[in-house]
Figure 1 (tube, one colour):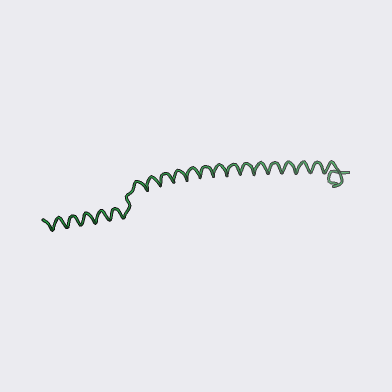
Figure 2: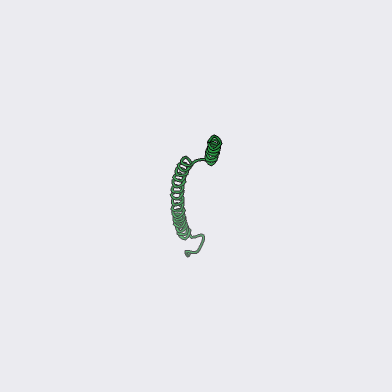
Length: 86
C-alpha cells in the first residue's frame, strides 16, 4: 500500500494530522484578528466617551441663541425708553 491509498491507515492518519494543523493555524489567525477587532472597538468606545464629555462641556459653556436674542431685545427696548424719556 502506498501513502495516497485512501484505505491506508497511515496515509489517513497523516492527512488528518495535516488537516488538524491547518485548522489550528486558521483558528489562531482568526483569534488574533478577533482580538485586534476587540481592541479597536475598545479604543473607539473610549474615544466616543471622550468626545461625549467634550461635547457636553461645550454645550454647557455656550449661550443659547434664544437667550442672546431676548437679551438684545430687552437692551433695545431699554435704550428706546431711555431715549424717549430724555
